[in-house]
Amino acid sequence: MAGPSTSCAFMELEEIQVLNEVLEDESVSEYTSDDDGVFDNDYTQFVTPGTHVISDSESDNDSEEIQEEIVHVGLGGVSSKFVWENIDSFPASRETFCNVYGPQFDTAGLDVVSSFENIFDVPLVQLIVEPTLKSYYAKNRLLSTPFFPETLPLERLEVINKFMHFVDNSKEHEYQGPPKLFKIYPVIQHLNNKFQNLYLPSQNISIDESLTLWKGRLSFKQYIPLKAAQLGIKTFELCESSSGYVWSFLVYTGKDMELTNQFVTAETSKTAVIVVKLLEPLLGRGHTVWMDNFYNSPHLARFLKSKKTDCVGTLRPNWKNVPPAVKNMKLKKGEHCGQHSGDVAVLAWQDKRRVTMISTYHKHDICVTINTAKQEQTKPVVVRDYNKHMLGVDMKDQMLQPYLLERKRGTKWYMTLFKRLLNVAIHNAMVMYRCVPNNKNIDTLRFRISLAQGLVEKHGPGVPRPVFGRPSLEPPPKRLSERHFPDRIPPTAKKARPQRKCVLCTKHGKRRDSKYWCSKCGAALCIEGCFKNYHTKLNF
Image 1 (cartoon, rainbow, N blue to C red):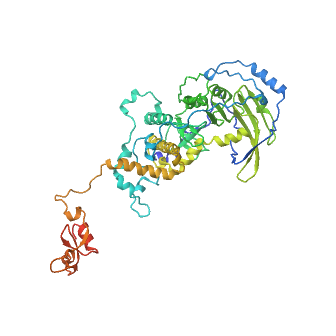
Image 2: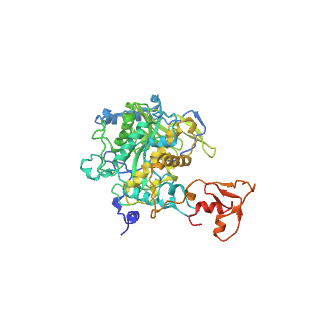
Image 3: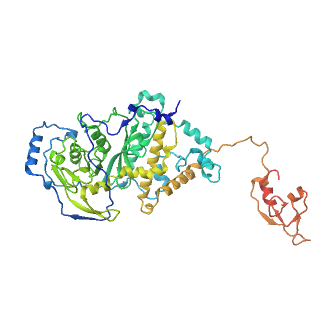
């Protein structure tokens, strides 16, 4: 029977859950927004906007249709009534961010090991990735890494991996967390608390999903074709846009995943619940959250703005409450149009494909950017800013890709997820370490090597070393255990430069005199060969 690593070939179709699920209250018939076209923004210049103006009659008709709808209070007590107006009257004010971001502890004297142990204070060896675990202990001269076998025997490491566990199975009846995450929930809780308490992200943060490769059988395994792994365990992550620091994360366990929050109502969409759950501790601080069209909606943007948090990103035009005048307006390439309702603006721009954006502080300003081919390209400022600040999760995944601890095959999904979270903890430790002015230029490889060396130097002496073979009944001779140095034989009353027969040469039937000896052993020895063999070999 095929094991977990090969079961993907026999997987039934219903076991794979597609990322873009059909939500009950926000059904999507087609995907029309375009997130492509990320260009380099080395140089920008504002020019006069060429906005396609929506007529007053169109706006009035739209407003009348909206006013006829039943107005109800939704997420966080925010009204879901939207009256759309011309975007020229949009106030476009960004929330003020005045927090001290970065590490929330004293970084004086911060070293590589302490930056990691602030998050995860368990000494582990698997920090530098090789093809298999036994590659660390290879005896081949080309592959050998003496550092690892000298630190921890392979048999001991295999036993640790085999019996590593995070919960007491006998207390499962007392467990109150997500049922499917029982095996690893303490690790998830611990890391979420540490990530949030040790660091405050800067103003720009992004929310996106990440995928941990897993091809075995698992009820909440996900298929995301645009991700590098494509198949595995999905996590929703909130990251700092500039560094990729993972500030909070949720493990997706399927459609029956339950998330509770003080702002959530029965009518709140599932994607909005995810965003609010990740963002809740940061609400009211003046952050700007960047999201793609899987999460964004006008109602969610209004709620976040009411909590002094700006919201920017792409938007699906057939989402609920999107202005019909923007959705149905026919545009030529380069044209754009927009409307706003209070503090929420929706903008459509025609590039190769139509792009619909939502923002709580962008107007319809246009800028000129210079791409990598040194060609000028005209685009809305909101699109340029989105391309710049939406890369937090993807940046983190890119930095972890060369050092994937979880790519080693295993039969337990929670061990694979643990290795992924351990890898994320190392990345977060590096981000905090780089906040110290003198450490900004350290790269990922140097940090990981320094971390491995530092952990072994700190915790290695306490690791018991196994003793192989039968113990000796007699202690070894002193010539093998003490410190010995060659010296000239001291002069006597008869000879100023005396010589004696070499002990080793005499034993082997050779007559050779030497003017050197070991003063501690009292034995004359040839300086070349004999002295070394006499003090290193039991039977010379």
